Image (cartoon, rainbow, N blue to C red; front, side, top):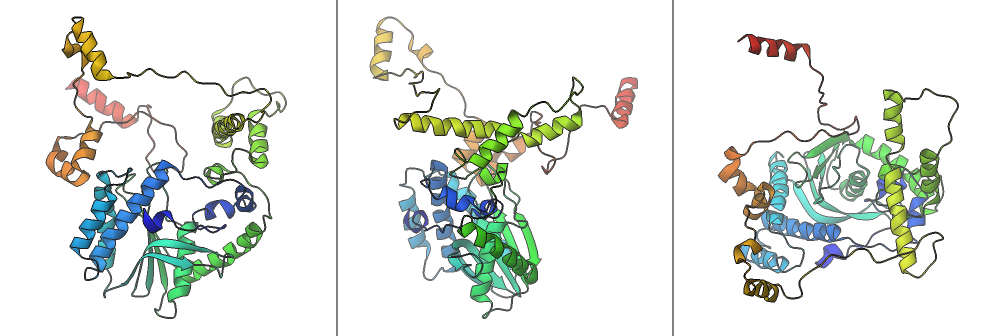
Length: 398
């Protein structure tokens, strides 16, 4: 997967800034652990490479025309993690950038997969911005995220802010820049693009702040501050003492005096917030202990064993022929059922799917879920309102 898979990563990378800015010693601590790459990350790398090809074809058609694009895409399709739905999701990313570019009064300067240095603020700091557009006094950083697990907001985003600082330092002599815009496109998660803007002076104020944090982080200094967000992708999360002590304190805290036998709603909300990381911490701890046991090291009180494995045919065709020879009807050996709506959409493609059968789809209400108050979705309740009661009464009378 070419250059994307071979990108270098600085100790204080932009993508992990949300961690080392909060928990400054974490960068040096997690450097002791190997930087493994998940299948999801490799899938994202492949999608990024496809997105880059499409952008280069659109903005640099003379140098990278349709023939080169087709040849390059066909090469990507041979990758093990290739999925046809990547075409539709990267089209969404391309369409957004097209719409942004067309809003400039004049043709903007466009940089694709641009390596930017923010070393003036973060020691040895550099990263790769997915797309940069500059024109009309505005510098616009656009980031493509292929993941579908966690929504990422552009507002005050430290990763994009560092990219913006690097781009500003690189282009401020060539272009008058007054406003910084940042966008995050997450097409697998939402059709809405997260956008945010600020004046240059606000970005530079962030630069002064991050410079202080980076000086601590590069030397492994400051305080460990475990939080759910900061710890989520930290490579040291399974063995971090600060996180362990914080969660032990939350999970096994002694009784603080005599209290009523039932907790209040206020206490319920507080405990949920405080204990949100406890279950994740225990899971990470189990993973770490299992790895140690498998490596032949002792974890007192624990050992690794073989789990209950599933059964499988050594030769399914031979097995089915043997069953049919014993008089078993072949029709009961097979199950024929339609694909789910999501599977059909994946096979057909998101755009064509909406065009062909969009009018035949209804959105069913989802199962009630408990989320943090900061979630953007509107709150729901089973409590009957006065308006609902009045409407029900009128329907009964009718």
